[in-house]
Length: 204
Image (cartoon, rainbow, N blue to C red):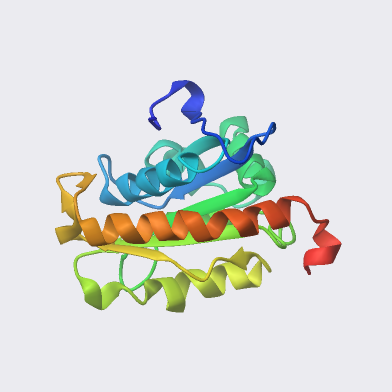
């Protein structure tokens, strides 16, 4: 199972489901290759092992140049507008950023500045981040969680943080991190299924 499948689609099975969940992973990294993107791929793959899903990966290294100069959503090119619609229509968001100046990257925030204020109400969001060491792990609680609380999203309790030492190059090689990724995926799916079956009004 690979996130390099055509159109970024990954398929799995979960309790005989017939309709796949739409998973959108958003990497706030400004580099390619990227440990943050590798972490998001690993999390999405863990979800895909447990459910029938379609995964779309959005990388700022790809859309950043077209995004950076826009002041309003209607200034964005169609290619970026398509990514925003995918974020707003996802059944599960997996979002991650490297720690940059004690926060997420500016372009990551700029992207979500264009997301509809009420488009993520009740949407499950799995938070992830990478940094040089464990001292940066609180970015999930102090930066990412408040951002998605503003959107009234359903941020999942278990986030995934990875340090540089958790990777071999750009591949997750830490057994502890792999176990946390698996646990996060396992705990996310019941909430994703619940949210997908409820109206937005019922989740507010």
